[in-house]
Image 1: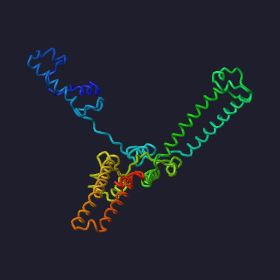
Image 2 (image 1 turned 45 degrees about the vertical axis):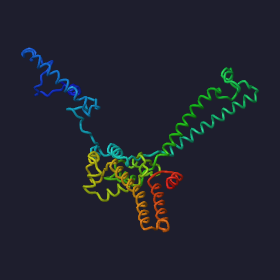
Image 3 (image 1 turned 180 degrees about the horizontal axis):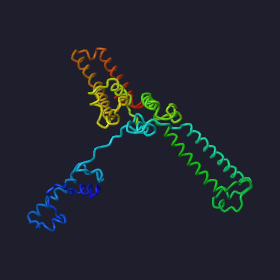
Image 4 (image 1 turned 135 degrees about the vertical axis):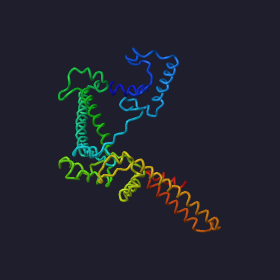
Length: 355
């Protein structure tokens, strides 16, 4: 029996080990020839047991893995993590490194190339537009107004005026094609322009890896990393990304076993075995940053209430200038906090502060 067959049997809950003593409905050729037929009670028990064990894969939490290669001995195979050092030096190792973390996904957007292509197509459309306008004026000058008022007569035209490279209909078809190409390219250029630039820290990390040990690539192939103004990052933006950076810097400067245990998953530790590369779990860092923001918001809400309560006990809440100071300071702190950790607009921040 092949491995594929074994896996399919396991999915159905019918696979048995060679040493198993479970009875079988079908049995083997030897058992059918030599063994006596099973008794009726044993056969009923066997059928009941087959149905019970047949339900186990269906009730298993790993039942969503339907591929025969994934379902092994009633559970999923262990996940595979690509290690940077396992790939040959050069494009293979560099591509795996860039894909190993969101912060390293730095590439060129070729802004000047897009600009040149847009200018070229723009000039082609301009010339076709001028030709179309010249055709319209020729018909107007010759008094052929029927060709300008209906497309049917224009398409039935037998001969073209002198100097026309093609008919008006053919020109419009080509003009539509060029215009749609120009529009698609224009939208793609805008999308690329909207992609964030890499932070200085992420850029230095990629640059140091590419230049380490004599360089990952030849000099000509490495030139793209030095064109910093044309680089973009595929790292998804966050409203409080600068807090993530602060946490990452803290983990880098104060690297120790407890912090590695808290902020490194098993998969992130498996990505590299060298001391130069440190991978932290983004989800754990994001959760910690969210906790910090939550504590900050609670402090901004609770602390002024507590201070005003203290002033009310002292009996000076209505006369003391400290009351106005508390309200002013914490309103300003809330304004600055919302501005720092979110991308809210000015009128949204003012409305939130007033509330």
